[in-house]
Amino acid sequence: MKIDPNDPADLSAQIATAIRDAIMDGTLIVDERLPSESELAEQFSVSRPTVREALKRLAAQSLIRTQRGASGGAFVNRLSYKDAYTQQITTSTLLLSMNAVSFTTACEARYAMERACAPLSAARRSADHLATMRAEIHRQSQPGLTDEAFCTSDVAFHRALVDGAGNPILSYQLAGAVEAMQPLMNIITFTARSRETIVALHEAIADAVEAHDGLMACDRLSALEAETLALARSVFTARGKRA
Amino acid sequence: MKIDPNDPADLSAQIATAIRDAIMDGTLIVDERLPSESELAEQFSVSRPTVREALKRLAAQSLIRTQRGASGGAFVNRLSYKDAYTQQITTSTLLLSMNAVSFTTACEARYAMERACAPLSAARRSADHLATMRAEIHRQSQPGLTDEAFCTSDVAFHRALVDGAGNPILSYQLAGAVEAMQPLMNIITFTARSRETIVALHEAIADAVEAHDGLMACDRLSALEAETLALARSVFTARGKRA
DNA sequence: TTTTTTTATTTGTCTGACATTTAAAAGTCT
DNA sequence: AGACTTTTAAATGTCAGACAAATAAAAAAA
Image (cartoon, rainbow over all chains, first blue to last red; front, side):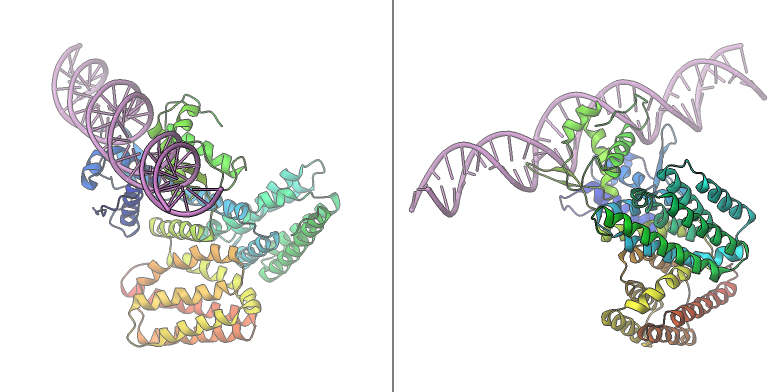
């Protein structure tokens, strides 16, 4: 397939890169079987453990799947939306948690992208999506809800809004922006008063989407963004931290 | 650290998951050193190669980095924007290429997200970003340019537009949407006439951004989206394929 | 023909060893 | 004492060979 220079550094990484490139440029097709580990070892002139480490790297990115037994082996994996979602969320979450991203910046990015979805969602949303949004609003009105459960429902509400656009690529992209925010949101304690405001805005958004009014949905998302920011600011200043 | 059940399936995956969870929930801090491979092997009651396979999985996601020599080992890695970009682009590209996503859907998602950036970029763009946009427009006007080089410049132009918003989270998210489209765009042959139209729209967008007019930038992005779609449709129908 | 058994192939794992890198400790010289 | 050199120990990177477990295909038996 490809050859590695005898640079003595990280053979398994080089092999993984070679195979990844072959997958990405179409040399290796979905569901195609890779040579067995022994054969790969021979081709690349390395040992089997080295090949295995390379394959595990690819498996970690869902690029291949392996199957034991006769006529088993490693197969090029079709990257499913579900796998892509998962990776997207993991990466986004770590990026936010490890890089001192301000709440303001993360919030801005998230609502900007949601506003990108809103007009499409208002135009196309199914009754199903609307029902989900209403159901989550109802849940958020329950008095006994913990902050964490409130945030989870919030995520579900926004997911429904985004999915209403009926564009799986948008849903995939937004998954990272919306879900990765949850740990940050969980830090905030939602008072009864602030919940009331947020739920009211959620209702306003759902109304706009129901009425197929994309512009109004955008406006109300902006209002929700402002509300969220103000809330975060008050919480952070109360604790003496920066937003 | 954590324990694996004696389910005899994929020990290395279980170990990788255990360590990944420890990183994501904060048990393991950035730059913290993991126990040595031998120690991990003992802790999890597996052999060193199995531990190594687990570590390679994590390394593939840039969650850890390894260093040889005395006081070397595996360290929790701070996920840099660069690494996150790369992963985002890889995942997005594969998702598009492996799942028969229509050009229409991908295009819609990309331009929707770019419109999300446009108002912010119009408000905040630096002279630098504007200069990059103008430079790429100039490059795109060169007659001898190959289709591929034209597409590359197109990506650079849109990257500058997105980066102008000054929000690294948005830039990271958009990287996937914009760059992953390139292989799809490369399929299209740009005639002299179509290039002229696109470059004119790029200029119009740059003008709007220079004038700090976000709404106009959005409108012109929409026009560019319509143009791109029309162009793709004509190319695909000429070849008897669906868009 | 159908069912069962065997067999071969392939991944998953283990053991043990050696090579290479690297920082710190030990030693040596001025 | 201080600066330089050498040694040493610890860690990852790699290799070789082996066995276990799963699995599908081939062979055998009913």
